[in-house]
Amino acid sequence: MYTVTLIPGDGIGPEVISSARRVIDAACGNILWEEVTAGQCAIPDFGEPIPDAVIESIKRNKVALKGPLTNIVGKGFRSPNVTLRTKLDLYANIRHARHFEGVPTKWPGADLIVVRESTEDSYAGVEQMVGNDSAVAIKFITRQGSERVIRKAYEYARAWNRKKLTVSVKANIMKLTDGMFLKAGQEVSKDYPDIQYDETIIDALCMHLVRKPEDYDVIVTENCYGDIVSDLAAGIAGGLGLGHGVNLGDECAVFESVHGSAPKYTNMNKVNPTAMILSGVLMLRYLKEAEAADRIENAVAKVLREGKAVTYDLGGTAGTSEMTDEIIRNL
Image (cartoon, rainbow, N blue to C red; front, side):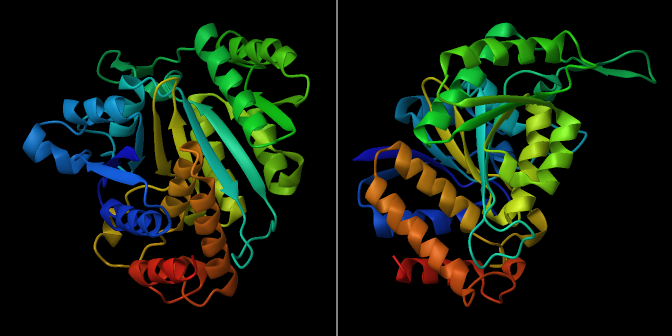
């Protein structure tokens, strides 16, 4: 048996987490859930979005399945997602963008993995005011941080039998920070001769991705670039409703969907649960529950292919719970 920390999160989080839990429980009897509260919903009771109890639970269990956490734009607490990644040193944010038959897209067959360093860069949120009318964000890149996330990307590529890894930054302009990340990629690549090494400027990568996504396999980049590119990749594969991923460190793994908390759809039984369910599939593979993971993935693929019981973003009329029921029936 495995004990997994369960974080319902904010907005639509409790709905999609409930869907993922129902599907996982139907396919695998080896998961015990330890539910904790995090996000904006935690502030009234705990005074902060990431209480110490959440960190302690994840450190104890080593694995968590997390719903989306709301980040209030321009005010309030530091991003709860950034806080979680920093406190647990989850330095590799890995997002899968895979197209499934039946999902509308101009790029059928797209299958990308974006690996994003998630503790450094300007996205770490270190900012300060300079007088009343100027603000500065610190872009902080270290050799150690760059090398370890690139090595993690290579190891992940091997585990998923991928053949090519692309390092993408803006080293032609950011010669010291991005240059350091690029140099780390060049050095680490020497230890993985079985995987093709590639490098490209980040803006060129975005252009090429929407022209020929099949030219790319695993992409590794810095924190801010990775956040943007992973959403682009999700769009190529068919939308954020399919984007699934994991935050990996050396000790813990927190699995999550790519999409946000979408508060305007809270409790409307409307949103697509696929991304969270597929994040659960990644979790099961991490726990070596391959048979259950295969059953869920095949059931999801069948429901998407048939297109009869899918949510509005996939062209259907089913609600979150109805689509979840259909996936469970197809296990």
